[in-house]
Image 1: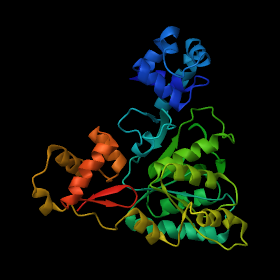
Image 2: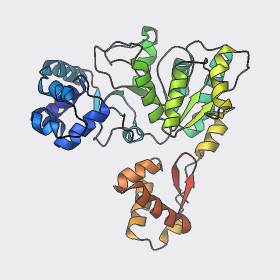
Image 3: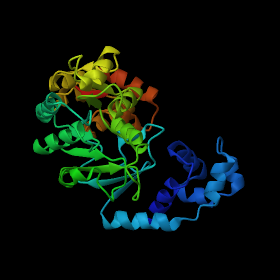
Image 4: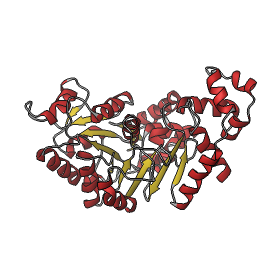
Length: 364
């Protein structure tokens, strides 16, 4: 297993190979190790793999760097998550630009039933800080995992509020797990390891450079059922994350503010241009996402109907799933989205399944 992880790490360290190219190489070659052992001729037969990529693979020799990374994750009890692993985040896996390898340290699942990203400006107003804390407290009955970026301002306020309310909270980092940035948040990050965790696609020795944060933001957007922007200026990382969320067909909420407040310019813009729903309280989120404070009933009486084999598989999977997420169901069924949609429609006609906002399916 260590040797397999070694090759996974090494592939992420080859210059010019991003997630899409890496996945194509693995698919055509039949595995990560096979990529390194493939001949130049066989690599050249893969569509869209150019000579620079082939040369980079053939000339790669720095396995010592990958070995150091492997030793670090073993010593620090860090969990490597390869995109073909069953515990890789299901919400993230479906996107082409999802990293092939993640590093996670913590004590919670990355496939929680409910996840919310709370983000915002690094220079919030007292109003923004108060509303962030109030919102997290209001969310307690719904028990979501709170995800953010451990940055100054709204991010760290969301993490602190989640810790205070005993909600799991995950920080997505723009650097390796050998450091905490900013340093001022080291204690919060340590507390999060006991009530959530820290996640990154970056190996050790990766500095928190500016170009890493948009990459970090796409992961925050993909991991969440919805993104909540508390305060934001006209430009900045929060709007980048909201844009990713819209591209990924996630729900986006924004807290409105006075037109004279610079910190509210971005939120007001998102609402005005229909890129975000106006947010007043947690009930707005629960309504749009179809969340209930109570466990959804399993409707046992209706399940005694005679079902087709594939219909029964859908029902059985929905019973097992922490979340009735349609994309996860497609993954579990190993069918196309169209095939699963047809089966779900038949179950809806029979009154056994109903669709809910947020791409969710519920047993009636």
